[in-house]
Image 1 (cartoon, rainbow, N blue to C red):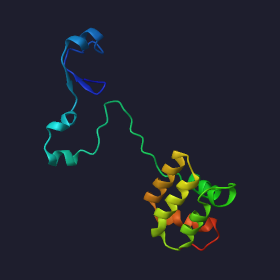
Image 2: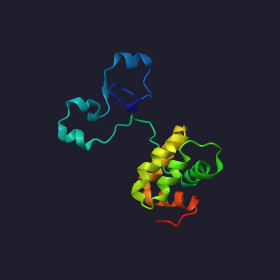
Image 3: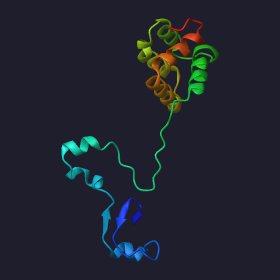
Image 4: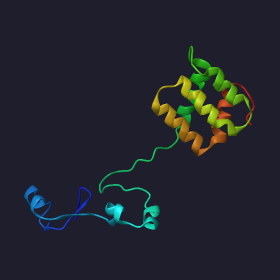
Length: 143
């Protein structure tokens, strides 16, 4: 039986183990991955990540509407935005390979880590789409 990421070896046929049973009975790791330090290098390379039993893994996806609004604020709407000229220059170069410069310029004027992370997720998911969104916001043709 799995309990808190650990395999319970005691008799649990009558429900969850009591605190006394947990203290008395031996508790062993639920998987061999818990002993990652004992695995050879080949097996370590195949283990991507470990999630304790019962934990939920939430994979964040790129929020394109939010990134468009954030870029619009940084490029057009916000007052006295730091890095605005650098951001405009990065988008006006005409090549999606300049996305690194876009991210650096965006960091100058944006301190919200959630917005920075969303921009990075969008860039990783589809850098050309992100670059073209920025170009449209400064009224340039998509590249």
